[in-house]
Amino acid sequence: MLQRIEETAAYLRSKMTTQPETAIILGTGLGSLVHEITEKYEIPYAEIPNFPVSTVEGHSGKLIFGKLGNKDIVAMQGRFHFYEGYNMKEVTFPVRVMRELGIKTLFVSNAAGGTNPAFEIGDLMIISDHINQFPEHPLRGKNIEYGPRFPDMSEAYSKELIAKAENIAKELGIKLQKGVYLGTQGPTFETPAEYKLFHIMGADAVGMSTVPEVIVANHCGIKVFGVSVITDLGVEGKIVEVSHEEVQKAADEAQPRMTAIMRELINRS
Ligand code: HPA
Image 1 (cartoon, rainbow, N blue to C red):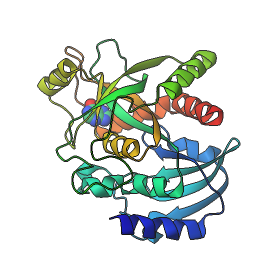
Image 2: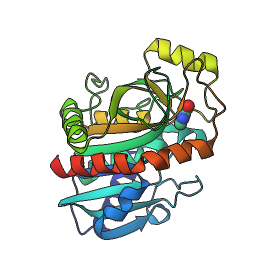
Image 3: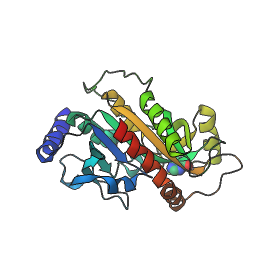
């Protein structure tokens, strides 16, 4: 495993002309951030040794290097989901490669169903914490000495970055929610009983990504900031049929707000 990570990092280093310490996983709601990256150079996943290849339609799958504001960044366009059939080591492989490349901070976004009755469709939710409901743990197996066998998770999402994001949202007049994201395997959306259970468990939103990458980032000592766009509501009395298209539509509508906060936060962090 370590050898594969090092091999991939060595390949990327041979192509890299910048030394970013900031990485972004361009999940749902953040795709348009790509247009703000300057001095861009790109490496398709298909050309990167040991990298899984993205299968979801509309995701071309590449690493994009460049500048966001004054900051050197690397962005992942296309992420790997457990429901696509990748195992957890594959889902989180890029994060370990990032650690090897010297990344110190990771920004992530996703789409999620709101289970908190105070939420509305289109809300942005800063992820304050998560609940891991994936059936396989990304750190199961021999420990890679990027971190301890039993990693602390008491601040999986950087409190400092959360505070900065809240200030930025206030300045920009953008409404923000804050809450706990529960990550589950999908690909089904939840039944009403499951949404209710997850809310009772302490979740404010539920989605099918992010948690594996965040666990591995924490193990590697990478700071994390995450935002969910609430694309549907798993709240009793408000539950309606959910489709991928509706999720996409709500995410597209929220995209300018999500992008504004992330752009500013990355610039200031
Ligand atoms: N459940 C799980 N994943 C999701 C949802 C949801 O309601 N909405 C967007 N992604």
